[in-house]
Image 1 (cartoon, rainbow, N blue to C red):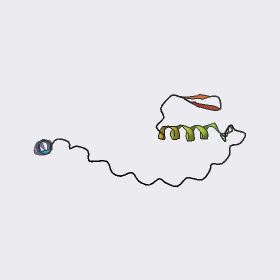
Image 2 (cartoon, rainbow, N blue to C red):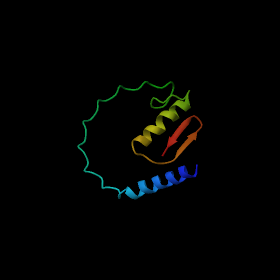
Image 3 (cartoon, rainbow, N blue to C red):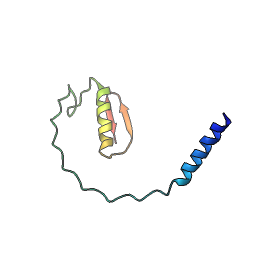
Image 4 (tube, rainbow, N blue to C red):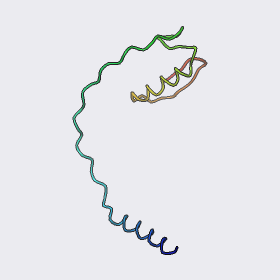
Length: 86
């Protein structure tokens, strides 16, 4: 049992010793083509700008990740049934 621990220790030490420094990043590749535009979204029920106020959880789950995906940062606040992203 003692030999197994020593073997694992030496194996890790040899692996670490054989690793070289990290390489540099390669050149950036060409930009791909722009994708097709998606279908228009469904209108909300009694909402403002198509946002349904009957199910605020769905609106919160849909709006916040989309804003983050577009590179926006800020604070996320829930005010009653309305969502404020600034």
